Amino acid sequence: MGAIAAVVNKRGENAVPSVVIMLRELTHRGVDAHGVATPSSTTTVKSIEDMKVENPNSSVALGHNLSRIFSRDRPQPLLGDDFAFVFEGHLFPLSGASEVDEVFEKLKFGPQRNAGSIIRELEGSYSFAIACPEKVIAGRDMFGTNALYYGENETACAIASERKALWALGIENVKSFPPGNLAIISTNGFALQPIKTVTQPPLKSINMDTAAKHLQNLLLESTRKKVSDLKKMAVAFSGGLDSSIIATLAKICGFDVHLISVGLKGQAEVEYTEAVAERLDLPLHLETFTVDDVEHVLPKVLWLIEESNAMKVSIAIPFYWTAEIASKMRCHVLLAGQGADELFGGYHRYLGTYAQFGITAVQNAMYHDVASSYEKNFQRDTQVCSFHKVELRLPFVDREVVQFALGLPVSLKIKSTEDHLRKRVLRQVAQNLELPQFIVNKPKKAIQYTTGVNKTLKRLARKESLTLREYVKRVFQTVYPLSV
Image 1: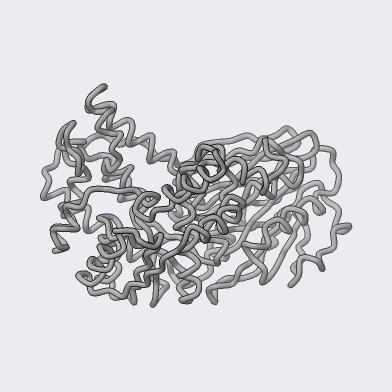
Image 2: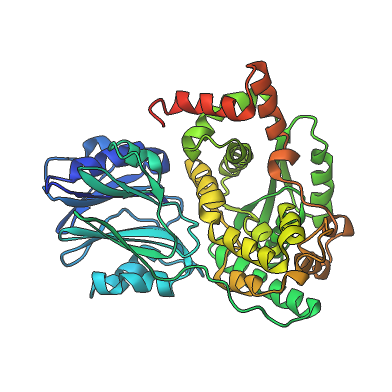
């Protein structure tokens, strides 16, 4: 776990100082080792302050900050014949071996020729960069579950694990790197090429029982793939359908599963969550917070998610607390149910689309939401978790699960325009897993509401005679004064 950064200097000047600046901005993602490389050399130090920026001198450079949470985690970059390489993330299924070495073996006999095969053939949550003479080659997994950003100005083209590293170079127009793409980065800018992206498969002719049984098997296998290197893990637990299924599947896999739930004091959902955990026979780590806690943590969370978006920060705050608790418990992996609502029609707004535009529009909306989840959800949550040295792993975000779910007819997800439960096939999976009926039939309620965070932020905004959006924006501008 850690952070990556890479720079191509457009003026042919030394890119190493720029990479070091970026790594300094990202030390919260890794402090155990810091490495910088050019196509022909690499340097690794224990403290970023010890990094030499004058030499080597190269217009192409990349770097890595390491947070060592597993024994297989190793300092980077790695140096090959006329290229250097950094990799951030994991491949699934997990083998216990170093993914960095596995990918490096794939590249060393032709990094430019073989870079695309990483994205095409290897499933996982990752981003990578390869420094070659006069160019950088960069890529990201097909779902975008591992954050990566890119941008350029008059002096440099750069990529990094968080926007703030690019902002530190004076790059203002920062974009999220498109998932499943490969980029050739040179003095001419970015040349992006789709390699393996989310596509809408043909719809299947399948009944509910068959679909639910197959989906259950796929989810069980996905969960196994994502936790096979662990003995102990945490689940971000709301007591709802998605997190209950994930927790149950992890328990079936035979692991030591711990549920983590957070919320504001006095929230009605607290007692409900305790009842669900008891029925699942899994230990629950429940922590409640106050209005003062929300006000105190808001600037830090905005610094991490790098957006003045009221809805996103309302979701990110509970995730920040959850990851913090997981870290204190020495659970370095947090499982969560992200992706289920997009795949199975969980959002209430799908009913409006259904009523106004019909079933095909709903299918298209769900596909679009799955394909854009990297910007709406994944990068927000992974950046918050990374701060606490916790990896977020998502069993619903799996190549086979996503392909199967997108190919299911809407009728197996939403019965009608009046279906206020939705996610019907997933509820059938819960039924097959013998979860209690009060879980199977629990309506969706978003985390920002069940935890009370959204209501608390509105209360803080009213104290300042501001709308929620205005309040969040004002705090954001104290964190990033030069933001536009």
